[in-house]
Image 1 (cartoon, helix red, strand yellow):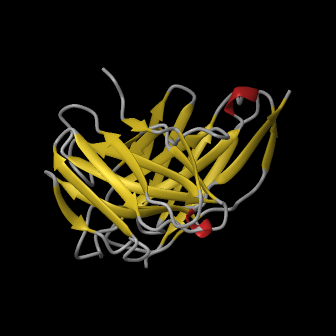
Image 2: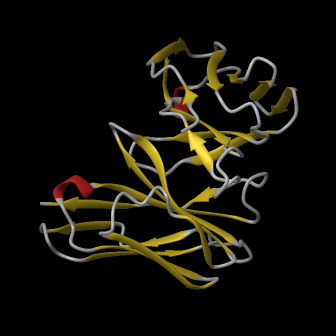
Length: 114
Length: 115
């Protein structure tokens, strides 16, 4: 089975540009999580969906960040406008059922905003 | 915000020795506990999950959970250089009323196994 798929793997953009990160969860999983990882703050949960519905977006740093999950197979995380402090690795993870069931991570998108 | 604490390391052990990684958590209601391994430049990889007090063994890995002490550990027997990585402890966060099943991650312990 394919694991969690993320694209692009690397993104370099200039400050002020819009960035869209994409994620395809593992087939059959009904929970999807977006994380951001930096050296200073470690791995932070940004938002999580259950059955395509956003459950908790309290980790989204500010209104420049938005996430959608239009169907069970696809999610996007958008940053508009991007800023240099958004530079980080963004991971998507999915699980069969949030909580007791394990989360599986995608390869991540390394975002650099100059 | 409930906390998950890990010693950042690096923890250095010789090849063949037992590596012991520790994690404490603050949310007494936590029920699910995970260890992830993350190689440099790669994504976290799940290696162990534990839900009940006691030990759980999987190959060279043993996870230990003590809910009374709010303590989780990971033992790696016969450590190999290929075990050199950062190990992340993750704990569910039932006190968060919005997402009781979100995971809080520690910042990880860096393990170095020397030949």
